[in-house]
Structures are given as structure tokens and as C-alpha cells.
Image (cartoon, rainbow, N blue to C red; front, side, top):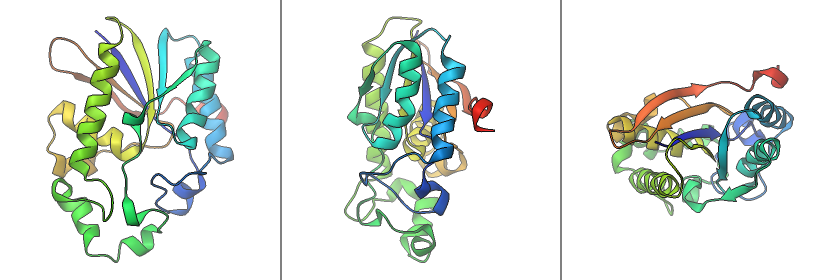
Length: 204
């Protein structure tokens, strides 16, 4: 049936400097991230992609737009692909957050973790699952679809589909501008690739 390529947005200065961007507006791709987005577009220009969806945040839209342009498509913003709401942790440094008691829970017991003033990992996982199922239902069998999102939401939805316990999802790695493939059919959804880097052509 439908194959979805989950792409994490390219590098931005929050990633580079170790800050929690969350849903903060105005976080744009840096120069490396822009090159990664252009390289993704160049590499995927001949792929039979039928649609490009994206989280509405700037860094994801800036990653999705070159891909869509190369394919002659328009980016479709989708709230379901949004970054996890980290609430009061937004704009904080990872150095500061590592000192907090809840930090261990993020990594050791995320199934019971809710960000102060924000979203739980479990809720984010179901939101991403529902978003992808909705996208699949809107497309034909054998369609190839791009969805540009964020690290934790991609890890969480991959964990869901491969039957990995939520408490283990942090063992997965999703790098900036990486591609992860999920194949949806009448049988259990299959993981085709994880954290695959095709953005090296221009970025290096």
C-alpha cells in the first residue's frame, strides 16, 4: 500500500547549541540545514512522490519546501506532525534540563512522562499515529508520501509501529535531515529504513 518517508527537519542553531526549541516560533534552518534541505530535494527530485506534508513550524516547512518545489508539488501543513509540546522546558538549554529530576524520567520512564505545562510522550505518539493513518487513508495504494516532522515524534511513531515499548523509544536515533520509511499495508506496518542519510551531496 502506501509508503511514508518521515524526514526530520535540517539542522538549526537550537540543535547545534543544545537548546530545546519545542514549538518556539522563528527557529529557522541554519546554513548547514539549508544545504541539507537542498540536497534532499536534489536526491529526491526523480522519486515518484505524490505529496509532501509538513509540521507547520518554520524549520520543517523550510525543509519540505525545496523537496516539494523539486517535485512540482505544494507543501501541505499538518498539525498532527507538530513537534511535541515541551511546555515550560521550551527554550531551555539541555545542560540546564539535565540537572532536573524529571530528566531521568524522559529517558528511563517516558511512558509516564508529561512535560510541565506541555504534552506527554504517550499523547504525542498517538497524535503522530493518527496523523499518519489519516494521510494513508487519503492516498492510493502504492503512493509514496513525504512527511517532514521532528526527532521525538518520528521516534515515537516508529516505536509504535514496530511494537517497541514506549519506554525504549529513546534507543532510536533520528538525525537532522534523515529519512525513515514506513510501509503501510493490510498486514502489520513495516519499517523499511531508519535514520537514512541521503543529504550528503551538497551538505559535504
